[in-house]
Amino acid sequence: MTSRSSRLPDSAIPLDLITARRIAVDAALLGPPPLPPTEESVVEVARHFGGIQIDPTRTVERTQHLMLWSRLADYDRGLLDRVLSGRKAFEYAAFVVTPDRVPELRAYAREWSTGRGDWRKRVRDFMTGNAEFRKSILEQLGTRGPLPSRDIDDSEFKVGWESTGWTHGKNTSQMLEFMGVKLEVIVAGRQGQERLWDLPERVIPADAPRDVLTEDEYEECRVMRAMARFGVATFQEIRLRAYGLSIPNAKTLLARLVEEGRIIPVDLPYPGKPSPAYALPSALDPRPLGEPRTTLLSPFDPLVYDRERTQRLFDFSYSLEMYKPKAERKFGHFVLPILHDNQLIGRLDSERDRKANELVVRKLHWEGGKSPDKATTRAVDQAVEDLKSFVRSG
Image (tube, rainbow, N blue to C red; front, side, top):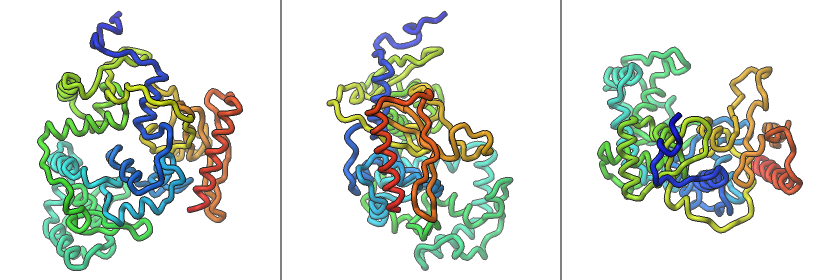
C-alpha cells in the first residue's frame, strides 16, 4: 500500500476538516461578517468568483439575487441593476462579469473559436455559412441600437442551425449566442427576461484592460481564479474548475506557483487515495473569531456548485431534484442548503407562492435526521425568516 506521505510533498501542511471548511467558506465570501449592501460589494463578489451566474428560475428567487442575498447584509435587488446600468459589470454567457476580465474573456473566445470536436466544427460551419447574416447583425445594431433577437432582420440568413435539442432552428438567437461568446456582440440589458443585444464598445467601459494573454498567462489566470474561489482544493478540483486544464500543463503550472510561493501544498484528510492539494497562503492565516454565519444557499452557489467537492469537504451529498419525477425526490423540488458556522447542516424545501409573493416552507431537513441545539435552531429559524422577508420584498 502506498503511504500518504509518499504521494504528497514533504512540505505539505496537514489540515483538519474544520480548518479546510473554514477556508472554503471564507473563500466563498460566506464567512463573518456579511458584506455591506453596496454596489461595490456586488462588484467585489462578481470579480472574486469571475462572475455571478444568471438563471431565470424563480422557484424561490433568481440565482443571481439569492447568491448576493447570502453574502450581503440586507441585500436589495436594485444594487445589481444599478451595477449593470452603470457599466460596472456586464453580462457574458449568462454571468455577470466585471470589466477587468476582458483579457481573459478574449483569450477564452480565441480558444473557443478553435476548439476541437464535432460541436465546435458545427458552430464554425454555421458562422462561416452565415457570414453575411453575421455582418448584417453588426450593421443593424450599429444603426438601430440595442435590439432583442426577435427584432433583428434575418433576411441575410442562409444556413440553418441544426440540433436535436430545443435550439434547433433558432437561427438568430444561436448566432447571437455564438457572436456573444466571441465578444462581437454583447448583452446591453434586459426587458424583463429578454436580452437586448448591442455592440461591445457601447457596453464595455473604454478603460477596460486590453491586454492580450498568451496561452500560459491564460492558464495561470484560470488556476488562480479557481484558487480564489476555493481557498483550498485538490489537484483535480483545480484542474476541472480551470476549464479542463490538461494534466501535464496543470502539474507544470502548479509546481511553478508553489515555487513562487503563490500557493502552498497541503494534506487534506479525505478518504481514499491521497491526492495533492493546495491552499492560498492568505487562507492559512488565522482570522479573528466572529459570530457564526447562518444563511441559505442557492443550488447554484459557488460553495456547493461542485457536488463531488461538497461531498468530500462537507460530507454533504447534494443534488438538485427539480429534474427528477416527484416520486423519486428525497428532499424536495428546489432545496436550499443551510450553512451554519462553516458546516452544511441541513436543507430547506420551500417555494415562492407567486400570487401571495410569500415563501412557503414545506420542510426543513436536518443533516443526519437529528435536530441541532437550540442556539443553532434559532439561528436557522432567523435565516429562514430573513429569506421570507427578502422574497416578500421582490
